[in-house]
Amino acid sequence: MEIFDSHTHINAPIFANDLPDVIERAAAMDVSAMLLVAYDEESAAKMLSLCDKYPHIYGAIGIHPDNATGYNEEKEQWLHQVLAQPKVCVLGEIGLDYHNEIDHTIQKKVFERQLQLAKELDLPVSIHNRDATADTYSILKEHYYDGFTGIMHSFNGDENWANKFIELGMYLSYSGVVTFGNAKEVLQAAKKTPLDKILVETDAPYLTPLPFRGRMNEPAMVRYTLEFLAQKLNIPVTKLSEITYQNTKRILKIDDRRKNEN
Image (tube, rainbow, N blue to C red; front, top):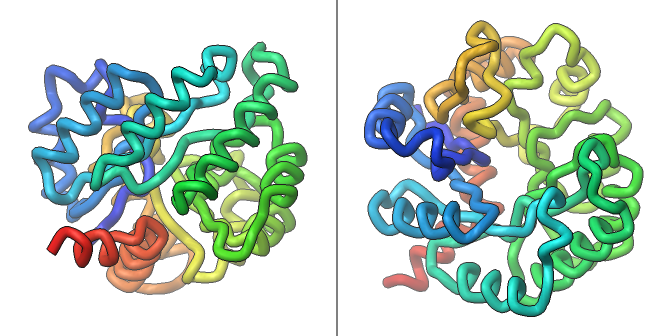
């Protein structure tokens, strides 16, 4: 069985002293690929180092809405440099976070500029949405174009929003949130998500799935989210593993990248 963790932050300092063991534990749980998401210069340097060291690790970089006030021309040039690296497949995570105190107008402007950049570079996006679903959807719809695609990272909406984002070419990535008892709407959305649009993720070190809530999350635990979803969708876990693995490979264009390397 092969599992693809479509969003993780094992480049965060909290993993620094345990990283080889974290990667080994993931492999022991059949996590054979992961998308490592960076958000600043330090995390990007660690992400690129891990991409170079491990064939099964791929990278993403974007300016998170928490850091929107720091976006400028110099930062965008730096983004270009990181996104030009061969294993960096995704621009993200980008989006809106109305839980934080960053001015919404600034967040929207930075979000829209990065969507334009993704189009220029022909890259998929990874979308962060917290307490801003309507505005996130509106901006994505405004910037939609033929061939646009991306990942709704840790999708936390209901079935109605799931359908709307899928219509815009988005894949829905389910994290440990879907296992929570108070996330019934998210589970219902997952049950209605077309299998060719579903991904799984950890968002490690955050959003640890049940039954490990309260512990630090890590890529190995994506298996529990996968098993939970497979049970709720009434399909074999090996089948859902293969489906989500191939879906993630497709959106990251991994096969195309390998051809270009040869």
